[in-house]
Length: 522
Image 1 (tube, rainbow, N blue to C red):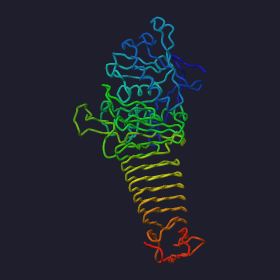
Image 2 (tube, rainbow, N blue to C red):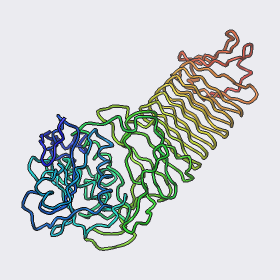
Image 3 (cartoon, rainbow, N blue to C red):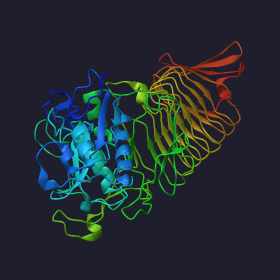
Image 4 (spheres, rainbow, N blue to C red):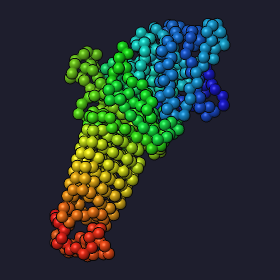
């Protein structure tokens, strides 16, 4: 297949002008023109060496070549697009001789240059002329290192976004703007608003606190235009984080720690994850803060629920007029790690598993068959849909299975366990647990400790595998004016009928009577 250099065919995909539909925040990112990649999935890029190479008249800008450091960071910024869609970028090296470069150089479709005589930076949308895909940066406005987390690196991603067909998310032209609750760098690098409700027409982030990746609506818009790539991180991927620097690791490989303009560590996590396939895990077992771990598409995880450790400061104290007003204007990102949206409902990109730390964590599953392990601390686990494996571990935990046939296991302390819908298997483990199977035919095990098993109408036909007459209690919510409950021995078990067609089978307790059981009717 041909590799286009210099100019490249484009196509018009149009955009949705319905401002009230469910995908408005994706629509709001799309300019309408894209590169035509029907014959190749590779775009060439190059770094202009000489002003004359650009082949069109804009002499006022005085273009110059990127530094080697900037070239390295620009290549990393391009990789952010490669990670989420199956577009490859191939670098075109330029001749060192000026005449040779001008006459014989093979320019890329995307071309990078520094310049003066201009504002901060700009990138041209896809077009079939010489300017299409060109980016220029006024070097005097940026730092030398362009590290992840800096304004410079975020601007590189932003301008590449323009050259790929992304528009400003805050602008109301065409398909309209991002909705007010999503018009923030938390959701897009293409908006000028650092945080929701930001009245300032400029970024207010603290130094080193800019987005470290494309964010969820950038990803969904790029995938709308060019398709999604499910081959990236397609294995069983484990995501871990340094609790001091905030750096993310993928299967143990560091992805770069955020730094500020002075090359100091900024100790921030502020990124979005797109994961192609596999059984994937957010492993936060090394954290001691209280955590929120949310696996839902478009959700976010908070690494310090009660504080701002590793959190991006999106406004360090500026008002809408550019005056520093201090603490009254400070705003932080709502989360640290954001989940990409699903592409056309494809579940392969979901994160399936999470491991909490030693704090009091809240963990929320998604449509997949999740494994949520709370770790130490008093945790709350919500399985959501799917056949989930939920384990509270140490601490007094509250666990909800959600829809699906779940396996739920408490820890060594007192737990509150709710199977919800589905034929669940619940093990209270140690501690004085309160177990509610919920709808469906559940199998309940109290484990060590004096446990309470709670039942009500429409709970199904449940089994208790280890009911201890001397310690455990049945709590049954029934209409007391209806027929009384009854019990009979069936084989080696004792079966209780409490009306509504619902039964409780106490396994291995043949020959007992209702009077032998501690039953509380409510």
